[in-house]
Length: 469
Ligand SMILES: [Zn+2]
Image (tube, rainbow, N blue to C red; front, side, top):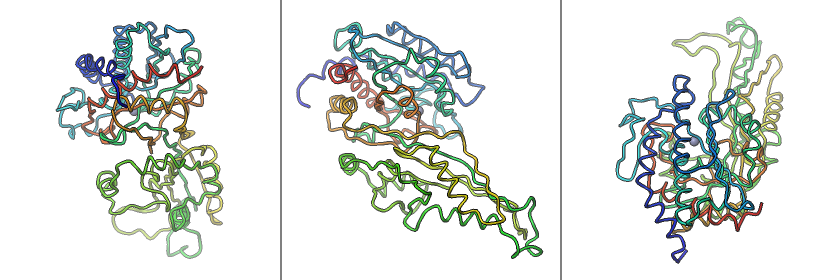
């Protein structure tokens, strides 16, 4: 990593940093809360702000996609001078999370405040900061190379509904299939491991959630008149819940692990080398839990990143008010969710759950299972993928230190994008896990966004040689 080859990009980013922060502050002021219909006009204003910014930056092709049910998404394209250059699609989102509880914010969420090298405000990290980072990267790339068009054909697809679970993403991809043709997707909505331990993300878990209800009769029954003679749905459901994991924590759905891809030796080595203090992590992330637990043979990071889970999210049955009511409840319900890893498919796990529930439904009880949507498939890309290796190299140039591969335990639309567009998807993010995204006092560390922009600028310069169409 010696040499001065990265200095033009770094100098260009530095020269543009003040105007970058000023622009991001303006954008954060627009409360584009997508899940709240009262703010849908603001989501539109946010899309317009972005389109105006892209116009000012010189992007030749800009569109706001606002026909149909989806909240406005922004699309832009800047063709490379070389028609043979690869095309890269950058994905991000401009909608933000609600701000409740607003009284927990030290400053109003949509009045951005700078404190040291941090910028506070809703969306500063998730995801306006990182989308703005890409705008800066393109400007820095052009300034550093002296070109008037990027080295790769760049496309931006900035969604307005990510925080709502991207309900119309497939429709957008379908309606605009011609515009979105590309050779690579760069997904920008993930974080670095730590400030001093930069990482390139290589995957996200999927998710499937639903509800299991055990029904006995149509009404609660007097436990003295019928107790001992009819089955209790709460007891039956408790047995099912207890049978979900074995003594060691392995999930007991039939065939659940059949499609689970083990992380490579290289990935496990990278994870092991990341700075990670289990007790510190537990104190900050465990919600007050006093001990770690999980599947044997895997570290805490591996349990979160590369292993699937089954979690009971809620249990309800019978009488839970004050005092006692001597009944056999008519029904019992468990809310359940699974985090999935490659190559598990939500629809297959749904079938496995149905089979498991059927097996654990005693005579006299009727089971009902419902799922929340189709679930989100997991996604991971190999560290050895040429585009992924180039991202790592570009980030190492920007950060002046080794960059390791990591994954994210949460879920996002990466797998949908990858499957629909049929090209590799890589991650480029420069925020932090403790940016308090979705929570009060969201912030972003500005120097990290500048590093991320420099990394992206390197990437656009390097990719034509590494990526063949
Ligand atoms: Zn996000």
